[in-house]
Amino acid sequence: MVAYLAVRSGPEKGKQFPLDRARPLHIGRGTSCEIMLTDPVSSRFHAVVYFEDSNWHLRDTSSRNGTRVNGQKTDHARLLHESVVSIGSTDLQLVEPDLDSHDETMNTLAMTHDAPTQRNWRMDMDDPVAGIAEAGHLIDLYSLSLHLLHSERSDEVIETTLQLLRDRTQADVVAVSIDIGDGRLKPLRVDPPEQSEAVTISRALVRRVVRGGEAIWINDETIKNSDGSSYEDLKIDPQWSDVIYVPLESGTSYPGVLHLYRSKPQFEEKHFDLSVAAGRLLTVGLARALENDTLRAERRRVADRNADSDDFIGTSPIMLKLKAKIDRVGNANGSVLIRGESGAGKELVARAVHRSSQRSRRPMLTVNCAAIPSELIESQLFGHKKGSFTGADNDHVGWFQQSHTGTLFLDEIGELPLEGQAKLLRILEGHPFLPVGATEEVLVDVRVLAATNRDLAEFVRERKFREDLFYRLSVFELFVPPLRERGDDIDVLIDHFLDHFRRQHGRGSLKLNELARDRLRQYAWPGNVRQLRNVIDSAVVMADDPTIEVEDLGLRDAGLSQLDTLRIDEWERRLIRKALHRTAGSVPEAAKLLGISRATAYRKITEYEIDR
Image (cartoon, rainbow, N blue to C red; front, side):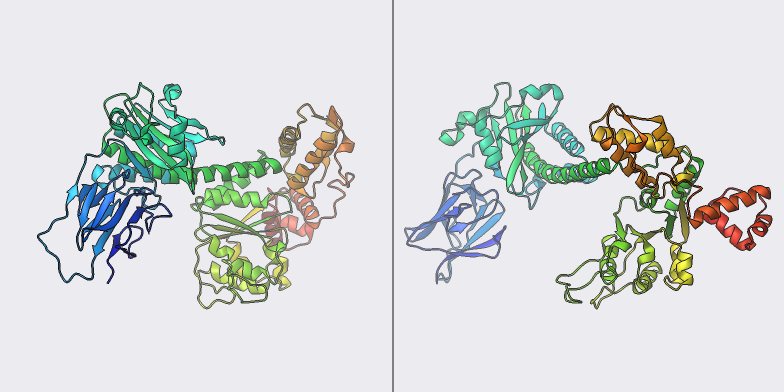
């Protein structure tokens, strides 16, 4: 039978490579190698195996990291049955099935030479700490990993890594440089900052480190002992005795370099190993932090475009009261029903409740129940399996599962069909649910916030909404006041939106005419804050310099005042306030004047948050 090399460990573990006595076989990462490895320590052409003088032989082909046979570093060795060739973390064992036995007294012959001081290492992202155990820095790397997991910003990630490396390696300078897009490296962070001018990388080193993905350690001995053209580019500034370069890999490219400098004395091998491992952790942590930075920037961009703010704008008594309630409700665990007119800011209240809760670090998903077709809302909320209905081409994880351990905000909850209401009730009661077309139930831990601009109590009476779900959702109720009831907050909001849209549209010198401001104050704002934002946005664009006039406001129903409105809730508020005023705050007497029961009067006073 044919002899072969069996891979006992490493990325190719389990493979067998048959040997051919008629020709040599090359081992390495190169695609033309007969025995191709993916081990990062392997060179492109690492070694060659050939048959000569009735024996198998191995010769190292000037590899960067050397070859071991039976644990001994060698340039050439005669291989016997069951000899083990080690390249990095890969062990290959020679198997000669034709041999019934072999002479146990015969040892592998090896010719060894001292390895040069220079080290190279192609990066491997699968195991960031491979080979570092003997260096005594596992605790440091573990600590660094924890710090990187908790660091959400790229500058924190880099700062943490540089501080660790400078302390443990006693480096004079530690830096991170990135490719600015034209093949040149620009220092992103240097520690200490005053050494920024001393951090340079030659074009030849850029090619080897950034484009070739090699980690390189250069010192005086490297240059002195180099005897091949491959070392001619290893030139460093004379002020440094030692330099370590580690590529920062991103997918298939190497957009950055971690570099360490020492004037004297020299780095040790454990410092090189630590730097390589830390560079791998830095790559992972930096990629995560940069993704977070991108998401934050995109969120700010969207918020700036829409003049959104996470904070409530205004200090009217009714808004201060709402803020205090949000803080208390946020610390509770029950469901929350948020009521208010369209455009009043119900989603802003929901986000504030989520931020005030213990789930603030978990996701919050927002679902507009009115925007989803009734026949699809159940599958979107609870998920479905492929083929469960026409058009279900793939499995879908429902929004409840996506927001597990977090918060789900259901806007326009009154539009949820009765079938979906039944499932929602079971979830709120702590029961598992069954996705559409599934056979296994799913249990989730989700806090539900619901919002509506409709009268759910009326829906219950009309049997459009389940009464038990109504009571389950309204464990806590928050009422968002309409803009017309917020007093001086209107002026604050006008100034906020005016400043924002002047900057956005490049019209910083534009002013608001006092007559136009008075019209904005007197307007009933049926569309509330959303309508005010859109009116200011349009006025800033359409107005001629230097001021915004009344006709620029675009209020199509500008003649409508609070006295002209036909909204029932507005008239109810006014009548209740007037009755309370006439009866000196006596609810029973006010109820008699209004012709309603005392219970209804108390309920309406609470619903409209009317002060007695």
